[in-house]
Image (cartoon, rainbow, N blue to C red; front, side, top):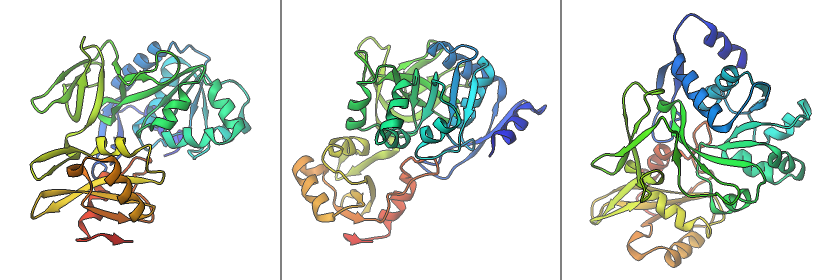
Amino acid sequence: MSLDEFLEEWNNPSPYVHVQTSGSTGVPKPMSVEKRRMLASARITNDFLGLQSGDTALLCMSLDYIAGKMMVVRALERGLRLLAVEPSGHPLAVASEQSSSALSFAAMVPLQVYNSLQVPEEKERLQQIRHLIIGGGAIDDALASELKTFPNAVWSTYGMTETLSHIALRRLSGPNASDWYTPFPSVTLSLSEDSTVIIDAPEVCATPLVTNDIVEFSSDKTKFRILGRKDNIVCSGGLKIQIEELERQLRSHLRVPYLITKRPDEKFGEIVVLLTEGSIDEARQICERILPKYHQPHAYLRVAQIPLTETGKPSRHEAEKLARLFKDDFLI
């Protein structure tokens, strides 16, 4: 969808905008969301970040998904100057060609941030962004370590299509960098019986949303951190193994793209499977050295490319489908 097409939809008489979920855990689903709630979400973010009319915001994400649409709505709500560039892996290279003005606000996925850090001119411009929010994927330890040194505010976002983008942020830069997300003041969080977070955000969601995200609250209940997703648990031989936790433990050791998934197994119920773009033997040796014995993968699959969604997130659904295709270790 082009910017003109979205603005045409935004300005039509309908009170709704059509969006679709990212598809990271399944098939993308179409949704209709209320424009008034999108405006409310935009106002909350603009207020939190202190954005003012005339500030420059960079739109470098696809308008097919909520993250891109909300950047436009934030600009409309606050009177921001919107600098729109074609979504790419190096958005700041294109943005620099169009304008040399300092950016007040930008939203990117981790891959765009990583790529920008590899080019000195782009890295310098990235550091000059007053507020940079990052969503749509995990931020690994190496990236977080580099972002911590940034002079301006860098934030990791928590949210989903159903919450009209983020409802909580955590600081990645400066002395206040943290592993804990702080929800916006208008948001109330609680835990379900399965320890998944329930989001009550009446300004953006008509009813409380029961998520699949397993979280831990801080001792004073004002912050939370994400442990993983309920549907990303491998029930293997009586153990419950959180996929994201295994990936976190391997992050600083496996240097090639990889992904943990699962498949059914007659003996164990389910088994852990590791997909890698690198050497199976190297991956196995690292897992045997780093992971507890009963958390190690039972199978390793070498793939040409880790499956991703259109928005660049790991496609858990496609990864599990790949793992089900093979009964033994296999080289693709």
